Image (tube, rainbow, N blue to C red):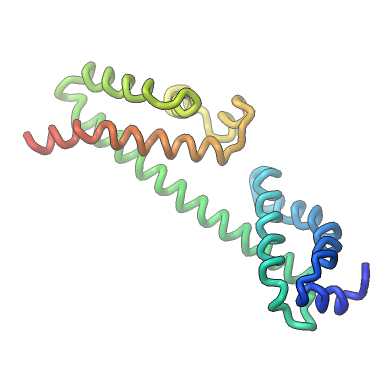
Amino acid sequence: MENEEVIVHRLINKDKRAFELVFNQYYNIMVLYAARFMNTREEAEEIAQDVFVKFWEKCDSLSEDSSIKSYLYRSVHNSCLNTIKHEKVKDGYRQHMIHFMESTYQNEFTEEDPELLRNRITSEINKLPPRCSEIFKLSRFEGLKYQEIADHLEISVKTVEVQMGKALKVLRESLQDLKNLRDAS
């Protein structure tokens, strides 16, 4: 590869060939570095790809004495930490929603007519799109973790997370009338 100062100068001028050189030299290294932080190779690849997209978007603002390697390592590191932090927030929200649904629909309504509630929830789950319903059942009824569901269905963990989020949102909205009925009485 050319002298780094020359490559940086070419990047500042948005030279696509210079970017290709940097990408080819550092992409696999950045994926391996991200994999040290992330749970799956897919997540590591996604982070590395995002970093390179942002690098291309911002490369015209590099300073002449920038170190490409340091920039990329720092960007991947920060992106991994942000992703982990975001996942913790999402996990906290998921746990809150699970607790909310369980406490709202089990504690508040099961005393009145548990069979009616069970049938209603089952009916709403069965109305979900097939893959969404399957993922929800594997998680809530079979007790599988998201990674286990992803492995079983040969899909990404992200897909499982998205489908569970959709299922919880739809169920929360479709069962809202039960809560409204109880609040009115």
